[in-house]
Structures are given as C-alpha cells and as structure tokens.
Image (cartoon, rainbow over all chains, first blue to last red; front, side, top):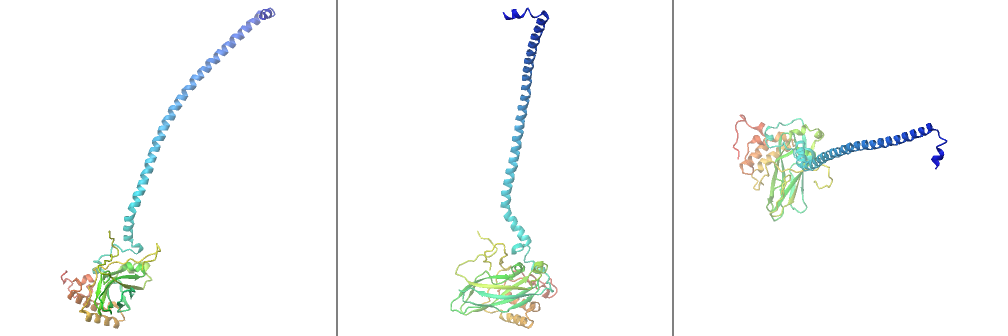
Length: 251
Length: 93
C-alpha cells in the first residue's frame, strides 16, 4: 500500500533514478563478490608456492645438519685416536730432545771410539758409597774425587769387604747428582745391577769405567756444572731374586 | 733417590752400563795394576788425563785374566794411546 501511496508524489524521472540506483548497487555488489572470489583464488596460489619452498628448505637444512654431524663425529673419533697416539709420540719426542732426564736416543757405544776429549772443560767427579742398613758390607770409594774432561774415558775404584762369616750377595744401584748431568754420564762398565757375591772375609776392588759425553760442553744448562757426584748404594740380594733393569719395561 | 712424590720435578733415571757388569776380581789378579793406577792418581792430584796409560794397563790385565770381555782398545776410548800404525787391531770376542 505504501509504495502505491508513495508513487504518486514521485515523478517518473525519480523512479528512473531509483531504478538506476538499484541497478548500480546490484552491479556493485555483484562486482565486489566477483572481486572477492578472485582474490580468494589468487591468494591460494602463493600459499602453494610458499609450502613448496619451505619443504625444499627443510630438506636443505636436513642435509646440512647431516654433514655437520658427520664432521663433528669424525672430529671426535680423530681426537680419541690422537690421544692414543700421543703416548708413543711423546716418548719419541722425549728421546729426541732429552727432556725430563730420559736417556738420549743418540747415545751409542760407537761414540766412544770417535769422541774427542774437550780438554778445556775440567769436571770434578766425586764419589760416594752407601750401603743399605741390612747389608753388612764395608763399602767405600778408593778415591774421593777425580778430575775428568768430557769425551775421555776414566776409571775409578770402589772397595767392598765382607767382614762376616757368611757369604753375602749384594746388588747395587747408582745415582748421579745433578740429575740433568746424569744423561751425559755414561758408564761403559761397572758393577751395578748385577748380583755380586762376596765370600766371608773377602775384599775386592770394584772398578767403574765411565766417560762424560762431549756434548756436555755444548749444553747451556750444564754451563755452571763443575762437580758431578756419583753415588753407589749396595743392597742385600736374596737368593734367586731378579731385579728388573731400569729403563726396560717388563710385561 | 727418586722417591719424592712430586710430579713435574726431574728425577734421576739410572741406566744400565753399556757393556754390562765387571766380574768380581776375587783372586786379586789385577791388584798390582790397580795399585799403580791409584798411586799415579795420588801423585797427579787425581787428574785422570795423566793416568790413562795405567788405566789402559789395568783393563788389559782384566781382559787377559778373563775378567772382562776382550775388545779393541779403540772401542774403550784409548785410541790416542795406541801404538802406530792404528790399523793393528786385536781380535774381537
């Protein structure tokens, strides 16, 4: 009823305008819907591309992680192997450089033949003799000191007497002070590390044949060393006991 | 000797002799040579360089009496005391 009532006041151009407006609004709504739909469609396409990219990136990361892990594992195994190899390597290094007082590997018996005495460097070698409390030998050096030069072989004597009525077997070891000079003190022959049997009331002379390495003169650490003390200590050896030779490892 | 429990400080490591141990001279066979050597030492204020002849004689005595393995004296460092020509060498054991 209302539109009928409203119609007579509206002129025909107005109705036309209204119709046009209605049409245009309808068209606007339609176009908006279309546009929205299109946007929906287009927005889905970049999402697909984005997921493909992330998947390949993930794969890339995975392979990279794998290589990094293998590198780390290899480094770990390498470290463990190195720690095992360090023991013989360090021993070789010590022998080559003579650090820590270890025997220098280059020391051999042919050196005695070819070495030249260093006449300017005179070293006093003092002798000391000790016995363990339980052995009843009288053990003493026959000279208190001797003046040698490096590169020259020298002879020295100790004397041991068994004052008891039973044979006593002794075994000795030695010591050189200062410790650093000990690596240059080479004994060609002596009476140490082997059992020596003394019969009752027997007295023997025990020689020590030694030389000081000529390289002693070249060592800057030995520049102030003028006195070397050689000290022997005798212990009582029990029957059948075998003392291990120093410097050799026994399994 | 090296019984101190301090790691890092140098300790002495005894080494066995090159040619082993001298057998004991139980019968005093080379005692005279030793006495000559000691007398020479005392006269020369214990200078080893002056008494090398006597020490060579003592070692030769030891070798003669089977108290020492026989070796050419050059190997024992007595090359300068050898009579010329040095090509003369004693037999090795």
